[in-house]
Image (cartoon, rainbow, N blue to C red):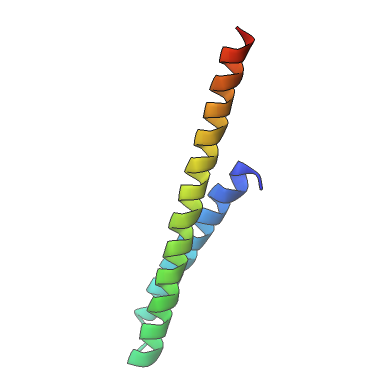
Length: 73
């Protein structure tokens, strides 16, 4: 999977979480509201996980590039 897609996924999930939280402000049923907030929290976790994966992918790419440069010398 390309690095860019991880970044896109992270933002997508964070945006979904924010959308759901905004929606819950107009919901009066406490059970429905609680379920939606749990879903929003799950989306937030997905966004953070995607961000971490992106960071790791970038770090590996940077480390690989550094190794290739040192080997060429």
